[in-house]
Image 1 (cartoon, protein in one colour):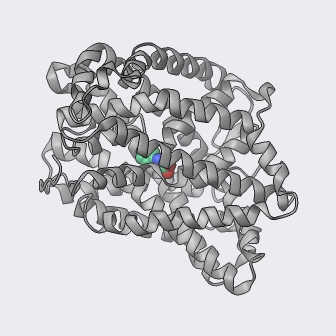
Image 2 (tube, rainbow, N blue to C red; image 1 turned 90 degrees about the horizontal axis):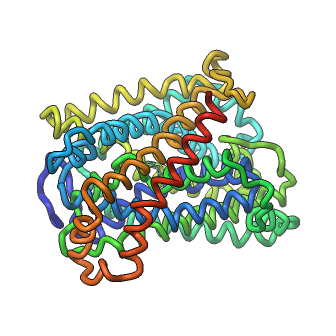
Length: 459
Ligand code: PHE
C-alpha cells in the first residue's frame, strides 16, 4: 500500500517513509531518557547485556510478526487480530490500545519536561539541573508544557502520518545522532569517564535477577515500540514488495544503536561528575546534562544544550504520534467516527489521564507516594503506570502476538507473507529462527519472566 492516499488513516509516501516513521516511533525518550536510568537501577553492564539479548533474540521476531500482521490484514491493531475469523483475539489489540493510552499519558509529561529544558538551556539556566525537583513539582509549568506537547501531537496525527514530519525527520534524526555522538566523544575525554564506561559495559553477573530481567525486557519492548500494535498499524501501510526482514533489521539497529551511544554518553558524564550512585531515577538526564552543557562554556553550552533538548523533543514527538495513532486508528475504524473528532477525543482523554502523573512529582502527596509494592518499594503514580503499561502490558502483548502468529495465524502463513518482497525467507536461517522464536522461545521466556515478576513484585 505504498503511496497510499487513504486520508482517513494516513499513509507513507514510500518504503523509506515507513522505515523513517517506524524508526521515529522507536527512537524517543525511551532511548535517551529511560534507558540510562534503567541501566543505573539495573546494575549497569548486566542490564545492558540482557537488554541487547532481548532486543536481538526476541524482539526482532516479534517486530517482524507485528509488521507482517499489519501488512497482511491492512487494519488497525484491534481489527487486525479479529480479521480472518479470529474474533476472540481482538482483546490483544484492545490491550494494546489501552497500553498506548497509558504510556502516552505519562510520556507526554516527560516530553513536556524536555520542551521546558530546551527553553531554559537556550536562556542559559544551567542551574535547572540542580533544581530539577522544583521544576517537576511546579504543576502550572508542567501543565503548560505538556499541554503544548499534546497539541503538537494532536495536530500532526490529525494531518495523517506522512508529509511534513517525514521530511523533518530526515534532517532532525541524523542531527540528533550526530549531536549525541559528539557529546559522547566529549564526555569520554573527561576525568573519571572510563569508570562509567566500565560500569556500563562490564556485566556483574550477580546483578542478574528476575526483577532486572523483567525491567530489561520491558525496556526492550518500550524502546522498540513493540507489543501494543503500533507496528501493526504502521505495517498496514507497507507495500507488498517491501522486504519486512530487512526493514525490521534497520529499525532495530537504529533504535538499539542510539540507545547504546546515549548510554555511553550518560555514564561517561555521570562518573566524570561524581554522580554515580545518586539514584537519579526519572530525573537522571535532566540533572546530569545541564552541568555537562555548562562545562562547554556559556555560549556553546546554551546552543548545544538548547539544541539537544529541541532534538529530544522532536524525537519524542515522532513517538507520541505513534502512541496516539494506535487508539485513534482503532476508534476511527471500529466506531466509524470522523478522524479529526477521534483525534481530539482520544487526545483529550489521554491528556486527562496524565494529570495524576504530572501531580505525582512532589505536588500532591497521594500521587507522589502512590503505591507500595510487596518488595517494599514505594512508587509514584507515574512509576506505577510505567511499570504496569510498559513493563507488564507490552511484553504480555509480545507474548500473545507471538502465540497468535505462530499458532493461530500459523507459521506457514506468516512465512508466505514475509516471502513477498523477500523470496527465500522461509528457507533462510533467519526465517527458521524467527519461526522457532515465535513458536517456543518468546512464549516461554516472556511468559515466565512476566508471571514470576508479577507474583514477586506486585502481589
Ligand atoms: N519507543 C518509544 C521511545 O522509545 C516509545 C513508544 C512505546 C512509542 C510504545 C510507541 C509505542 O521513546
